[in-house]
Amino acid sequence: MIKIHAFHQFFPVGQGLFGTGSVEYWKLSGHEAIREQSGDVFPAAERTYRWVYDCGSISGKRLVTNAIADLKRDCLGEKIDLLTLSHFHNDHINGVVDLLNEIGAKTVMLPWAPLWHRLLIGFEQGLRAEDPEMLFFVDPVQYFAQEAGDGFEQVLFVMPSDGEGPPFPTESTAAPEPPEDLVGPGEPVSYGDLEGAYGHLDHRIRMLRSGQAIVIDGVWEFLPYNDPATEPDDTFGFASKVESYQGSLLNGNKDERQSALDDLRTLYETTFGRGAAMNNVSLMLYGGAVGPWTGQSFCDCECLYHRLIGVCGCWKEHETRGAILLTGDGNLESAAKWGSLEGYLDARRARRVSVFQVAHHGARANWHDGLAALVAPKTSVFSSDPRRSYGHPHAEVLRDFWTFGPIQVDQQSGISFRIHLER
Image 1 (tube, one colour):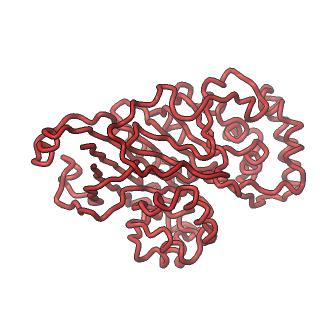
Image 2 (image 1 turned 60 degrees about the vertical axis):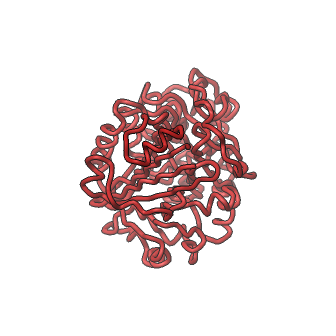
């Protein structure tokens, strides 16, 4: 018997997003399985894999600080295995540097977007050349190295998902595969191959091509989706202008970089206007068990027994499919958008989604009527602050998900899910 315990949690950070979780598995002999079913102690997990998806809020920095402290206690001095940043907006990333310095991450996963597109997103948010955060949009690897040092081991860029996703496994794996190589998921790549710059950080950069997933010892997979349609049309030739400054931006000193950014900021405002809306990338992430599984059970309670000793009487048998789908601020404004995502995941993966993070805090612009029925999750998570001027979640989005277990995660209330699978 192989047994998986998956834990998913959304911290109460208000208008923002901070999701986390872990995956543990056991390979039990027949005798151990009998002992486990009778309630006796069984061996320690063969592995605990911890993940985080986004870490930010604009409702108050203390909310993120408190959540990081809670997560640090759970990590027991170990780094997070996978930190995924969906996109580059402040309410999703303004706690990341603190997270890396307090806990650390083996792999930081980002959606790949070319330099000119990243600069458009940074300028759109009002950042200027002198703002320290602007370096993140110029060179995210250098930014993490400067702000977090050894708090991360590698950056994994996810290429646009413009092909077919990985095949859906139809056969069970007899036993978990050996752990991944210590260098982590993805394949080595020179920053020069991606951007035209070369430097001493190449050994900390990896790439995940379209159609590839991160597989945890053959029992669990994380499959990212980088919508290729998010790159904006370059009708004004902004990309070529950025290319002429690329050497100063990526290989120049601080003064050279700032001068180049000042010029490009002026060009941006002249060309697009202040506050122009750009197609913003948002990396979606599916996480689920590999192969066929049975014996599914699910609990989302916060009772005293569960908090103290990890057990309770609230387990629901055969009520969940076990997978989670995180969308960040992804664009699901039409049935075609959902169809592209579902096609990349494979419909059989999509049908396993139990916990669904509703895109962009429940904003109508990233949703279409009937989306909830297409996803059909057991639980729909809205991470937002309804008291802010954005008014998220919007009423029509909430109504659409009303029969699919909507949960409001705000400043006061978080939610966690425990899912057990076996075969």
